Length: 81
Image (tube, rainbow, N blue to C red; front, side):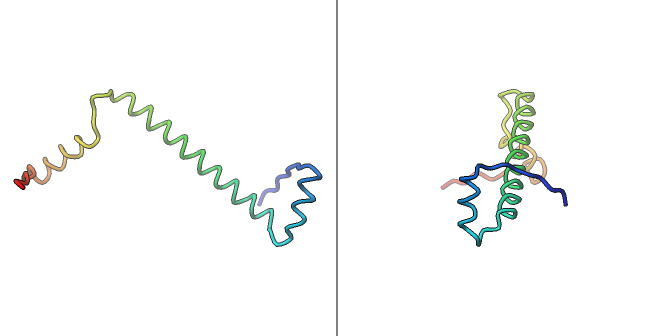
């Protein structure tokens, strides 16, 4: 496992010491993992937006799914209620 070092003010360090039951290393590891996942999700959204922009604005995912389902299973029956 790699080691990283962070710097905090003496005031923050004093306050951290007040909470002896907090495992600060584990807390920071989890915070880093959460941030990485958040940034990965943002990057994935950017990629999806770029792909969507290339398809044009007249394309509808819902309509496309319906088209392929109808082709596979036949036309859906309209409810007369």
